[in-house]
Image (tube, rainbow, N blue to C red):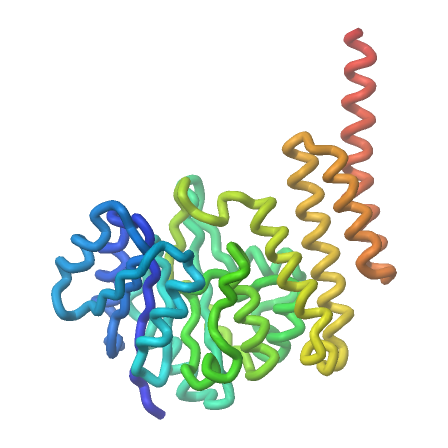
Length: 315
């Protein structure tokens, strides 16, 4: 098996962290064949920092068009058999490429391989996979066997920084869809899972670092894009051709809508919250969904009632 890997880094105004990301690639025990940084119209010192690494980094500068277009530009410039993605504010462990390439060598039928990672939000470190396990009540050991089914319930792959994918698979399914401001990675993972097996390396091999400029900081918008992606795939003929997947996907869609409802509730937008609770209930009439609706909505109703009583006592 060819073991050459290209790494694509999209960056916009990343002078504070792009150097750290590139250094984490240069420290890899399995060296990258090429590092392609797409400078997406940065207006700070990003380009100067990148150029400081000399010829070991290929820089492509474009007008600011967003992360999807930047990644697609990088993909088009890749020459390797495998493509890895690294967000400019994330950092790989030294053996990240090595461990995933070992997995891909053992599983030639796997088109996309992901790994676990730590989410560093400045308060506490947590493993992405442990969080997904808890949410979906499905052990990581089953994810290699049920990739599409688990992905339909939620984006267990998570960040693009965790992925190495065969270039041939991307040529089959296409790149990132620039219509999605967020969840563009979830859309691509779904298309990959429909066309190929997904592989999971259950090791923490990178650190995803949160900061105030992260797109995912707007959680309501993030989940609404996630909802749009999942809704689109549920309606597709390719998705409907997969037996038994629709039930999991509808339940995942309902869960996403309840998460949006919760966020609206916590931000004081009660009518929008109610709309999404009812939207979640209408997604599927399964017993499990009715139980989910009862769990989420009942807790909020109790809280609203409690608030009302407290206000009445203080008047």
